[in-house]
Length: 288
Ligand SMILES: Cc1ncc(COP(=O)(O)O)c(C=O)c1O
Image 1 (cartoon, rainbow, N blue to C red):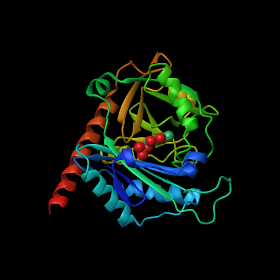
Image 2: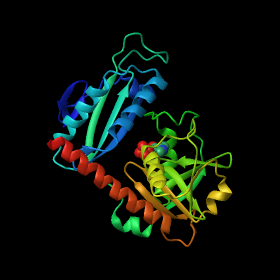
Image 3: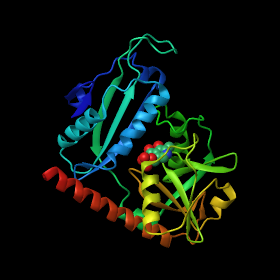
Image 4: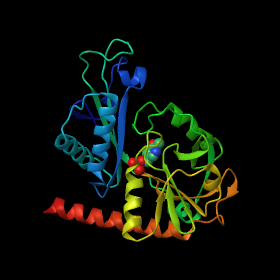
């Protein structure tokens, strides 16, 4: 079952007109919320980011917070699996092709849920490989736009190399990865890029910083040079689906000693514990 413009229906029956501006221009925004044991994780934060992306692209938000929440919960209840990735997108709607905004288009809302695929245990324990590339995307990477051609081409570079991610540098400074944020560890300190128009403000990024603060692991948020990044003891990528994943090889060279580091192992454990706690509370609340 998927949700399209107010109706729940089987995906085979979901149809969008070819003049939808999402199809013609990539004129839309999206979110992906992980759902564990049918409880959405950090839903309010994802909805806040959606509202921000809609405001940034001047697309009308067709639903209130409460309506979004209700649709997402209803859709995840209709799936046969417990752990899900709920993808939702809003486009500017259907209109005669013209770059300028149509006067009267109704936004198209599409929501689907797929089984959540987190990195397998073996990859978490062994660590993943990444390649690097110049970040040649637009200057509004803080908007979660469905126009992902830049990210798609960059991610394919790592796919071609059999690697898990592409780590991006712009003018010699670390930004993020093709579909993840990036942290490094140096001398026991977690270092990460500041939020700006050049990176997506990740929900997982925020969770990692909150967990680090609670566990009193030192954090430093500042621009990191490419040289510093390559010399780091640890590199991690974070996202709703990858969670926290250690990168143990960058462009074929070992990161640190080539194994997931101690700060990564601690953070991975904290993240799993946090997830379990949030899910338990969510289930208790749903049952009450
Ligand atoms: C470019 C980019 N950066 C970072 C992220 C991580 O964001 P989140 O932690 O909210 O999933 C994503 C997730 O899709 C992304 O596409």
